[in-house]
Every structure is written in structure tokens, then in C-alpha cells.
Length: 187
Image (cartoon, rainbow, N blue to C red; front, top):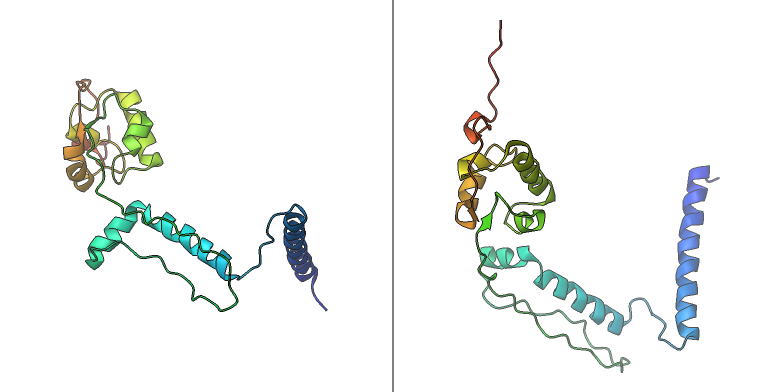
């Protein structure tokens, strides 16, 4: 006898299957093509979408460079079956090129989107950079940028050619040299 949780799971899967059958019937009644799961044409279309997404991924170039491949990835196609008369839609191969040259980002006035465009900086780190700039004023230099949690010497070295600073740091603002040090106890 199934437990109540197992009954709920079975009911859920039955509802999902019924919904899929209903959508397929609705598409067929509307005059569109019903999707036949596992059909060669659907499989080819799905593989083309995955290859397109993989080729547009920023990490795709890095993986190719590490493996030493120089030719763009070719799309995989399912073997043609004798009964398949559906025309194949070819998608143009997208050859990822080198990234466009980026002008240095002025971190003393840059927007969140501009900061996120830098390598290794995501939304969380970009918001910490903005918060630090709003709280303590301009960074003024790469050393001042290191006051932000998450930016250490290695990250600063990687960002050095990509960033610039137009502001002057406020006197008394923390610097990267004081990050991580505890204040001495006052007796």
C-alpha cells in the first residue's frame, strides 16, 4: 500500500503526463504539428539549440583553448532514418571570435552593469564595490579597491589593465592594506 507521500507523487506525475497529452492535443487541433517525443526532427532541433547555446557561452572559448582545439565545434546530428521525410533545418554555425576590446572601466563612477562586465565580477561583488564606494568615497587606486571584500591581490592584478580611477580617496577611508586586520583592543 503506498504511503500518502507516494500517492501525492504519483498523482503529480499523472497530472504532468495528462497536461503534456492535453498540450499535444491542443497543438494538433490548432493545426500545428503535434510534438512526438523522440522524433528525429525534434531531436535535431533540440541538439541545434543546445549547440547554439554552448557556442555562445563565454566559457566555451576557454574550454576549447585548454583542449587545444582550433576548429569550431561541429553540430551533432542524429542518424537519418529511412522513414524520416521531414526536412532538416540547418542552423548556421556561430564561430565565437575574440571578445571585443574593452575600454577601461572607471570604478570611481561606473554603473553596476559596467562593473559586472569585468571578468570574474558578478552581481554580488559589483554591489559590494558600489556599496564601498558609496560608504567610503572614491577608491583612487587599485590598492583602494582592495578594501572591498572579495578583491585580493590576485584579483587586483587581473583587473589592473581593465580598470581606471578618476577620483581621489577620502582621507581616513580604509585601504586594502588594512583589510582583514583586527583593531587593537583599547584598555
